[in-house]
Length: 465
Image (cartoon, rainbow, N blue to C red; front, side):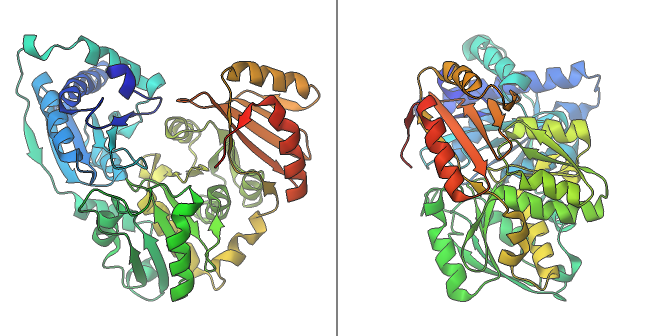
């Protein structure tokens, strides 16, 4: 069962099979063992370094899975701080605010309602992925036998940190929106997820924010639409509402509210790399000369915009584990991924949908132009979007791509990136499926279409959207 629930970046599966309360206890014990060992090995002897912060989302299975997980942690001897019903970035905040050895959010993010899982952070909320500790957790979980161990009876307490979390997030919101000197009309689609809890608690008293709510009710654990804002069809309701009420912007959050996507005043979706380019201008005003991180699927407009604003672009691998590490290594003030994760140095290098929302709202309220016009200068290239291809031998296909364009600039930072000057592409292997993922960019749509047709035969069978 363990092999079916451990993924590249977190633990995730359908409930109750293979993920259930029995397995949750086992994983909780293993997480506690790993986090406490990490703290001890790093020389932390503070008693707080046996504390683990645990939150959960609104899925029907989350309370019982969280309870079993916490019991496993306590049986190892760790002390648990139960945060209750919170968004995923809340857990990262709590780890740092309380000085814990780590934390866990019970969530399946954007997956359907019958899924659940665990996102783990260690000291300083550094992410735990397969290459950064998750393999150890899996190994520990495989070795534990509940029937043969003597429980150590760690403590548990409930903590309400919403006031502290609100204060932290609102540092990123323009004070004139807080006190009403500026105003902004935003339509927010909470996707029946944790944004439905977070938005009212954090931004409810910001006098300048008029928020029209869509899908805020998360009491049933079900979704009006799939809680994945990267799928264009999931934005239809938001787009229609923005146009109907003549809002300034629309924001759609994913299930656990660590990602968000924006649509402009006309309801047109803005790519998250284009948002990164625009928001980088604001961050570099506050942190002149700083590095800004972006994932390697992003448009060339992103590094160009960072340089133009006096910053230093740093290109990274796809995935929150790698992006958080990149911010820490480079001191970048900000980072963005095509997936809708936005990272902030002043948020412990972690991603936050709430802070991204605050930054975007402040920048838009400060400007006298509509959002479509503000992002227009960064739409200088045409993009294919991510196209998936079925391929049972993806490594061989990547080698074939090398041979097909021998004169191009090639790097293997994450999959293969081939830059031919007038166009470039990145092809990556899926972590979970026999798929190759293509992102291609050129000067215009006709060139993109032609180049995709040229590349596609090397990649396998194209998967229909």
